Amino acid sequence: MKLSFALLGGLFALASAHQCGTKPNADIKALHASLAANNGTRRRDQYRRPAGEPFQIPTFFHVITCGNQTTPGFCNGTVTVGNLTYPRMQTVVSPKAVEDQLAALNTAYAPAGFSFVLNDTAFVPAPQWRDLEILGDAEKAMKTALRRGDYATLNVYVTPIAPDAEAGSIVGYATFPGRASKAAFARDGVVVDSATLPGVDKPPFNRGMTLVHEVGHWLSLLHTFEAPDDADDEDPLAGCRGPGDYMYDTPAEGTSATGCEIGRDTCTGSIEAENTWSMPGPDPIHNYMDYSYDACLYEFTPMQVERMAEVYVDVRINYVEGTFEGPGPDEELEREAQEKAAQEKAARKKAAQEKAARKKAAQDKFIDRRPLPSK
Image (tube, rainbow, N blue to C red; front, top):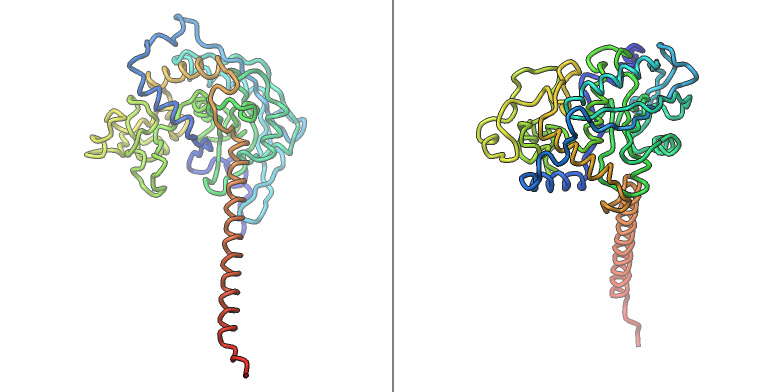
């Protein structure tokens, strides 16, 4: 089978649907549920800054290159499809692209009262940190080596992201606030695919909105189409059936949006009327936390703005190790591995016991059939 090298270029990572690799954990959902329940008891101006004084977030960009090249162009890379690995041309990010990305980020977050202050941009020649796998060893090594600042500091890692075996193409992913373990601190930050920065590649995801979306996660926001934990993956109305993103002013949305579907309304009738978590209305396709094309995204809701400020102050600025108990990403993987090993051990033990029981039963049956000794 022949594959077009053009297809395997920068746009390979930006297949027809925007895919975010950020998955909410139980802690962040519990935090949102608690804040949503207590929303009426809090002063709405408690976390607002005086007019003209946004939260200033120190920001570091780490651009992973395949050499010392920082001028626009391409460098050689590979992509794995099934069991086969093919060469692909990967985009090279320029300093101008980083400047444009920071400008897009600040334009999106200015109405929300956030300003991202660039402290440094580092171009890191490290081919081993390109084509990253989420929570893989290379990502851990990269972040351990490069991360700067405290828990209120944004670290942005720009590098090609490897396709995910289940989700397919991934354009970015981020860590949620709230986990205060050392392992989680080391993993904190946002990763975006190189091709998503402004002007680096072609539409529809080349205006820098991927970073805007992922920083929303970094500031605690969930997807507008978030489905319940027990939802059927094939259910087109899964997002209509639960609390969604725990924001009343983002109407419930059955599934993620694509393109720019004006008037799209996936949750209607009784299923919409019965959902008390979200206000009725058409899908929030223009919300930065949906999957619409970059040109279609332009807003956060007032409740999202308030929630980001609240969590940024309570969790990131006032970060104290151990405040939010629970395993970090590394510990989660280790726990899952331990649970899997324990299950496999239990299965082997059970199989051995069953084998021994069958053997004993056969021996007993053989003994019963032996003739009695003659007198």
